[in-house]
Image (tube, rainbow, N blue to C red; front, side):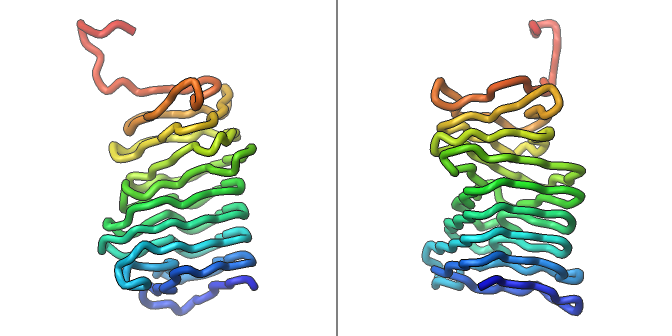
Length: 219
């Protein structure tokens, strides 16, 4: 079954309170008015760790949708086996500062003319397919400390620039590689890239902003 969210009159944020749920179809977000939907919060499992599985795609054509929306401390593991396709609106792993955990992305990640936002740097979006995943970000506004991981020997192909522009943003290279090109760079203006090794690295060009360059600097 699919989940369809189309609430033009939504006047306050709505918590779906999922815990242990598996969605076997797609989640289609069509309209959330000026408020947002989120999958869950710590109270959905009495403060205990929460797992959620989405077997299909998450498609956002308008509105605001996030995994968590609570500022309370909560631990989340969310697996998304389809693609994430955002063509307008706002998507992110958490709109609450207390969240920690991981959103495991098994499919492609496509965002255009929309906002990616996170209020917690303790929850990351991880590319974990174990094969090749495509990432395309076009005219995207980045807000908050978005954190990412390349894991499970995954090859992540960038089809556009991938930007870290917040001091809390981190790209963790665990296993696999991030493939860039002259027209699809890893751009680090602020934030950090960590964990690189012979088992996980950036293959191709990237740009890195050095915040200070003085007489002692050698470039």
